Image: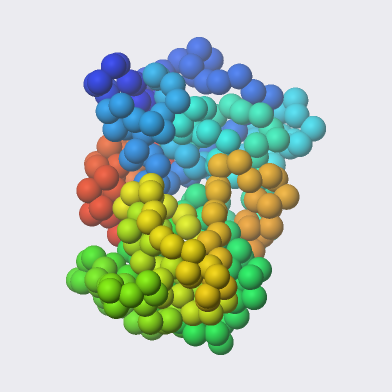
Length: 329
C-alpha cells in the first residue's frame, strides 16, 4: 500500500510517499475503511514541521480527514458498506490518517456520510468546512441573525475562512472578508463577500480601550493580535468564534468588550467534539451550499505524490481554497 508517511527523527523530518505493509503499520481498531478522498488542512502542514507540537508519534500516516466506505467491522457503531467520514480523534496527528487508501480505527470515531452529500464534496468541506459550520452555528446560538449587521471573516482565503465566507453568504449574512492577499478580492467576492478589507482594517482608535463598534459577529481563523483587535470592534451583544492560531496563541485584551458591550468569545473544537455534535454539523453542511458553490471552493485535486508540495503551499500561506487528495493515485 502506498501512503504519505511522516517520520520524525529528533530535529529532522523525513516525509514522502512510501510503500508500506498495511497490516504491520495500520493502527488497531474494530473498523477498516477504504478511503475515497482526503484533503489538505493547515494542521497537516503543522505535522510535518521539525519539532512539531502537533505530531504525537514518530512515524505517522498523515491526513486529518478522510471519507470512504467500511470494508470490515466488528463495531456496533457501523456496518460493512456504510459511507463514513473520519476526522478529529487524532487522525493524522496521533492516529494514522487519510493519506493512504485504507485506515483502521475505532468505529465510534466515524460519522455517517449524510444523505445527499457526495463523498468528494465532504472533503471539499473536511475539517475546515466542519470548523466553519460549527463556528456559524455557535454564533447563531448567541442570537446572531443575518439582519444584525456585517460579520467579519479573517484569514478569508484559507480553508476555514473561504468556506466560512461561502456558508455565511448562503445563509444571508453580510460578509466582510479580511485578507492580506489583495489580489484575491475577486475570488472572495465570488464566494459571497460583500466587502473585502486588508489586515489593517482593525487598527481603529488604538489610543482608546475600545474601537468603533462595527461587526455583529466574526469567525476568526488567525488568533493572536487579530483576535484581540476583533474584540475591540464588535457591536453590543456581538460574538467571535475563535478557530485558529496562525497569528499566535496568546491574546491581549481587557474586560471592557465583555462588560460594556456584552460580547462573547466562543471556542470552536473539531477534535474532541462528541458524535451527536459532529452529526448535527455534518447534516447542516449537507444542504448548506449548491453544487456550483461547493465546486468554487476547490483549488485542485492531487494524488499522494502532490501532498508534499501542497503542504508546503499551506505552510507558506500560498494556498487558496481547498486542495483535495485522491489517496488511490
